[in-house]
Length: 555
Image 1 (cartoon, rainbow, N blue to C red):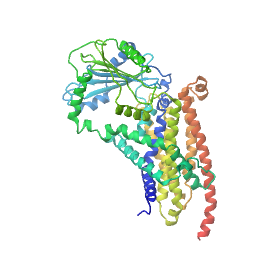
Image 2: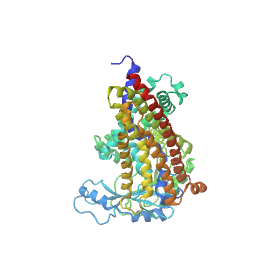
Image 3: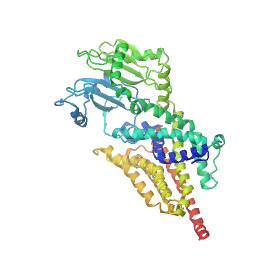
Image 4: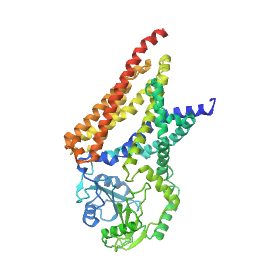
């Protein structure tokens, strides 16, 4: 079938890239946006436009907030089929309280798990969630969509397809195939070092597109490889091979019991009521211990297990923003007395490797230059895939036009939808965020509808305008959607200023970079879209001018 190994690799690279490139495009693009997910959250929820705060006092701020929390009616309804008998009017037996923050979070996320009487599975808990202002404990609206961390980030790894974790499986399979495409691409391009420095924008369109495809693929090759690999490793034990909770369920339970004995952290409640000592004193002791080991003392995660029980304990985890590895350095105390139970020992070599690879992917570290390089790497991956689509269509569309085939036309319409259509959908949800009333019921759902609706319209438009591709010409949808991107991006910036008062001049003057950065990125997007639209327009005019002469020659 193939005359050489390189030819086989070229076939593998082309067709695997084409079939799964649409998924990888979304993974790369929304992964790049997720690098600044907290900043996008602040842009989309004006009430959170405050400076990031450290973990507040538990005794003064967190405990009253936890005691106010209760599961929502929707959570109770979802839990009802898993309970024998009636559900209680109020859940008082707290299984756990936890609070989470990062150095980029201005608000604090709270989680409370409650034991459910007569639950069919005794280990099953019902959960409540809250978002508070860490400065005073004031509850913030928790029903607003966090577009960055609550939509773009899950879209990056799961496509928001939650049924049977289907989206996670699709993205995981695509990442696995991407590793094969990277290897086959290296085999195809033997002169990688030369292609690192080769980009000829003034050459023929096909040549310049291929140069850009090769350049963006080579310049970020380590980034692409490690992120596909680490993404697979992160989800391997949870989704792809969850043997601990399936085939080895009995062994998993036994391991938890052995671990509880060895660590001194009780796995179950004692059934004896007990009080709660000062958690602030425990946090202060944990910070002193970290400082003694020359570690940054910011608290990122605070957990109280078996609250109000004699077996209760408090775990204080370090934010770990001073290094790439995702470390916890947990220190654990007896909840009733504040007595130190355990300080997590140094990680084993295997655990350290896991912490490093996980931290490398999730980038919780405090390093803004590296964070920007992450985003540029993700955008380089998206550009590589986009130019691959364009090269595939440009190389085949005239041949398909002569043969009366429509394959290139279909791929081109899908490429327009995936590249410019995806950007339009992203801008569409930001515009909807600024236009929809704050008190609108299910406001987050309407924002999601705006995203998917805009993307669906982009698909219809790309297909409707694709007729010229069947004649070997450029699809006008490329240019038209680029102009729409420029218009949408400018509209989002203007609407932010009009609806919140935080216009670009004000945020720049105040040095409030989370919102100013998003606005500047939107303006940069508009400029790039205008340049692309003009370039595509020039290409369309040149192609239209050559088409009559070519048709006359063939006649």
